[in-house]
Amino acid sequence: HFALTCFAAGAGGMGSELPDAELYLTGGLHGGLAYTDDELRRVFSGLTEIELRRMTDEAPESPLFGEPFLWAA
Image 1 (tube, rainbow, N blue to C red):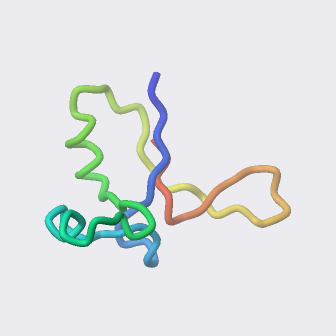
Image 2: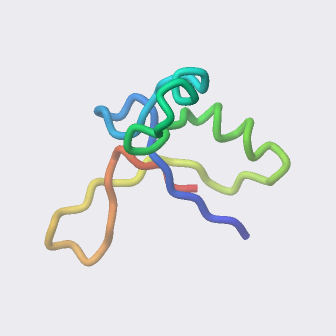
Image 3: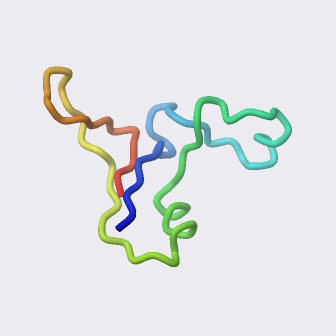
């Protein structure tokens, strides 16, 4: 099995959505890279997808972790 957590594109500014060329020019990741669901499916197309979803927001006092600007797969 393979698990993944990463920034979700279009999720309130968390993670950079700059094109690759811009990242190369600036020489930085600007806090991390954000991906769409289609981009993740393309990158991992050689694997069988079990689940790909946005995390559920969890309250600070929750024993669980979850932020809606992150993908869980």
